[in-house]
Image (cartoon, rainbow, N blue to C red; front, side):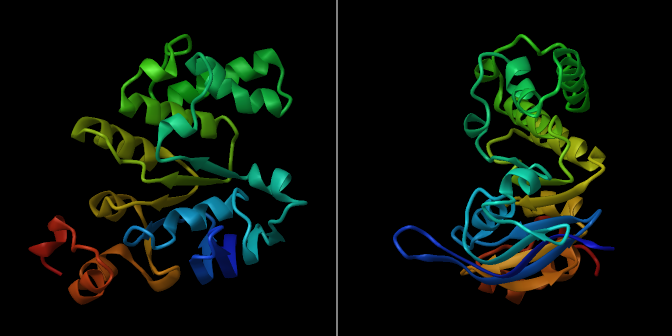
Length: 244
């Protein structure tokens, strides 16, 4: 496997000087689904926003070996698709069609091609026929799927999901997990839903205080109660009484 997304000694400070990432070094390989977990303030979302050029820190972020910076962020950033935790941060147009079409239109696609892309994206997230609905009148689960469709319409190589299951009821959560399982692309998921991470991810990175504490298979890390508790995490219920 080749590294598709890399951090090398990457550091980021908030505007008030508080450090958020302290020398993050990590490689995401093509085809992997990787979970970033850790307590609040560990640096998960900061790392993922930096991966698509939305935050600029010190050190290096590479996409397919090319450094991501101000000069390259427009081109390389299109290879990284970011789905925000809160759909209101992603959906701002009057209709679902216009939300999903916004990216393809700005990439220069024709009206006919844009319509084809929107139709395909809605099919992928199982929301056919929603083109003329208002995104803001949908359920949270539907809004999250529209947000995912907006990103898929841009055809990114890497799909980044920030807390995808937050505020979802059990049925909507299960729908979203099934959808993510069908995504045939490199995926990075940040979240507190460790059962979801366990189900979806090939590999897990535990962050705390802006540093990587551990990087291994989900079951290996999540079964280590001492490691989990020391990083303010809980052993997933499904692993507590299951045989090793």
